[in-house]
Length: 357
Image 1 (cartoon, rainbow, N blue to C red):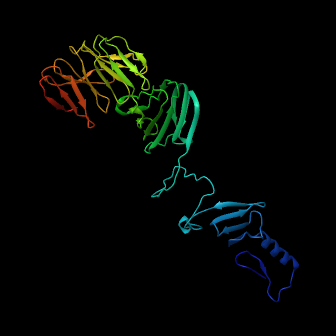
Image 2 (cartoon, rainbow, N blue to C red):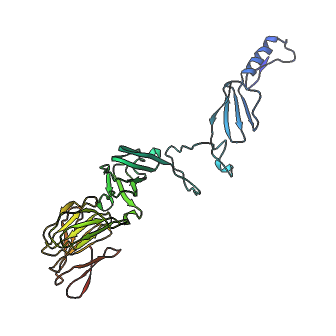
Image 3 (cartoon, rainbow, N blue to C red):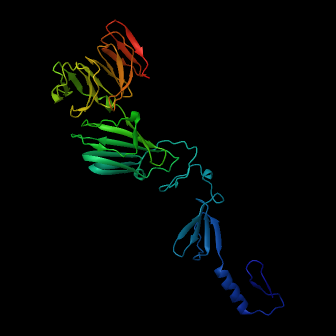
């Protein structure tokens, strides 16, 4: 009597006595053996926990559990994606933060998290999508959560609708605004589009106001009574009137964030809240007639006064950043170009181009 090499089945010689017990032992071993199929059709001979099937239609390796097939492995030895010239997904693909290299993307969409009409404490969770929308109905404090790990870039696009009433917004302390100034979102009836970017796991978020809505600046008029008035674009009616700032509020400018600056006969520049007309800060006295005002694309403020001097002001505080030379008198003609250069006209009839630095 000998046995087979692989499974130890009893193998009687021709001269051995046949014993039915040997046959039964062999049958029991065969019945318990794993079975592997490699074919497109589902096997009909299946043993729970023993039958493996390589499904050649999709490259999946499956194990029969007694009631259904369980997928147990997919690897390059079984199936490469490159073997399929037109693969398609039957559900969501979770890359688990692994890199997908060199894709060519066509006709794609992004998930949008719609918060609806709400307010209060709102969390923008990047796991819900990288684009969030909200219509405010109350003062709102935003929190950003679940950005990518440090060393990877994560972005958030936030679309805020202020509806018929503009509500106050508080941002995370981790947000660092472009040019250091939080945008003014106090205009009602506007969709504000903001973009945020972090590359250190949310420790710091860079923030920008995006789009052309910032160009929808209302009309402001300064009069001899020293009062600035904000007018309705539709009918010219007065939305608010400021306090009387000396007399002749003839120097007016708006920065890219919607804030208003006024210069008056007392030589002082004031930054006004565009929602109320209240003064946010008041500069020092620059002599008299601060009637030349301009703002550059970065939000910096320039003032020209009767002494022929142009000064660059910090838009956050009103502090003087630099003072030009004396250009004679009445440097009241000021303008800024798209590259940030300043042009000053004075009583001597000359126009001078100034370096913003």
